[in-house]
Image (cartoon, rainbow, N blue to C red; front, side, top):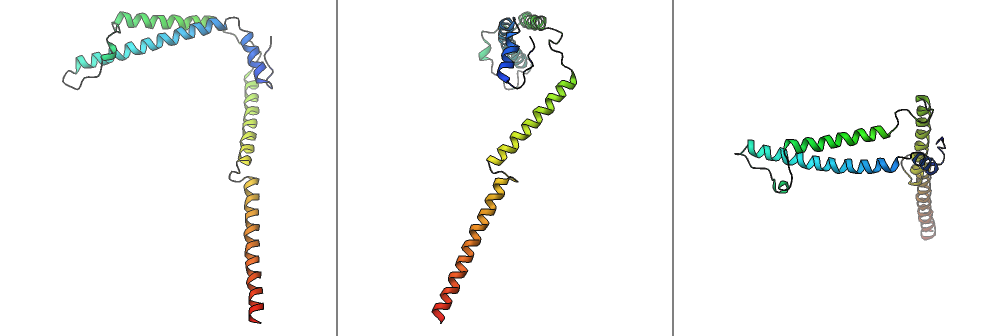
Length: 169
């Protein structure tokens, strides 16, 4: 199955997801990986704070109240680190090493150029909608404002002239 319909994003992504039979396995492993990374970070943080407090006893101690239930021995930290390494290796084993499509760097560059053109086109259109600097809408608004102010000025001058003609004569 070739997932190359780039004009319809939803169907292309669905094609990519459906072509992988291991998508749920990867999700479960990633979830466990993130949980282990959080545990590792908690253990490492407690380890550093406790060692700092032991080494610099004369300075203001760092808070370690949230570390009371955390086992911060070298063995436990290494065990969690080994679990993380194992999970990363499992994910690497699931993901294929060879690309599933026949894409070259030229194809990727061409797609990048197309995306940049679309992005610039959208930016120009949004600038027009928002009457941004340099847009035709902003120029039209300035032209309309100038016309209105000019009309008000001419009306004031003509009224003043007519008043002068009829009052002074």
